[in-house]
Image 1 (tube, helix red, strand yellow):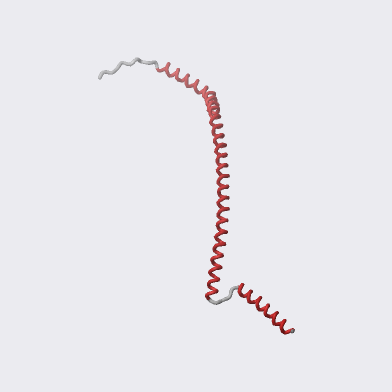
Image 2 (tube, rainbow, N blue to C red):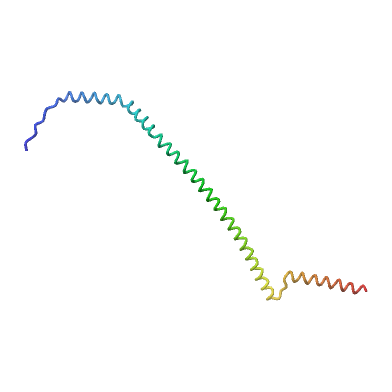
Length: 134
């Protein structure tokens, strides 16, 4: 395949023009960088404000949810306490009934029966003492 004919370019003129452009770019870099950083910071301000608003909104929402959860938890604990008290009383009655049944089956008197007998003995003792004095 035949080679394409290329036009000879002067190397010195291109190199010197490139060097000048590079030198100008290096000198302008701090100013360009500063301008770009400033522009970047300015462009970030709305994003920062949106982020702060989102954080604030999320904080308020979490606060409301926390309050709702605390209220719900307090209500549940109260209900549980009421239920526990009812069950305790019910269990107490069942145990008392079981003890009475067991004592009755063993022919062992209850406290109230013993107290009743003690009052009757005292009553009879007073009557006997009254009869002796006559």
